[in-house]
Image 1 (tube, rainbow, N blue to C red):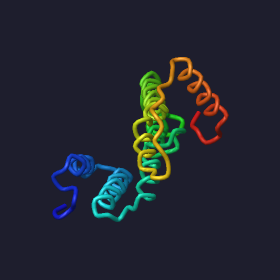
Image 2 (cartoon, helix red, strand yellow):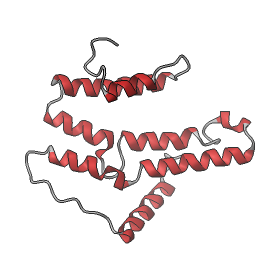
Image 3 (cartoon, one colour):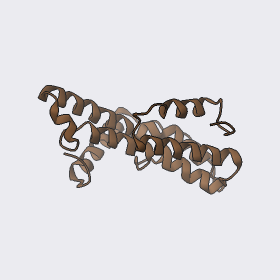
Amino acid sequence: MAGHVLDGTELGDLLDDLTNGTNIRPGIHLLAAAIRTLAEDATTGALDLPATQLASACLDGSPDGIDAVGAIGLLQAWITNPNTNPALRALPLEQQKEAQLHGELAAHALTDPDLRTAAAEANAALDPRKEVPAVKCLTDEERKELSKKVADANKKSTNRPR
């Protein structure tokens, strides 16, 4: 893609590698195109400060995991679950279970609130209206309590694969 602002950058090369191949699903091409568009908008000045803050929060800066990284984590669990992806049912049962387990572990990792700390702090630093608070690290007890709350909320959710 000659002439693009991302050519020769780590991000541009990653996006090119991600979509290089004839068997890449259209959804992956759309994800790469969306990332490329946001990066190019930032580089060309098309994003003002409020739009930058919103994009940052939507990517991975939401403390409650309602962001693109969280969505990708839940998608990973969705596509590796034989209940929501019939293609997996052709595999032996133990292999189905292993795929589902690792998909769920990936979703758990990608929806972990601690994963968002740096992005949330970067987003807060963009806010010209107030001082940026110091980073608060969770204790093991607070992390367990938060994980329990998330697990309880997920169990009650009707919008999750079971």
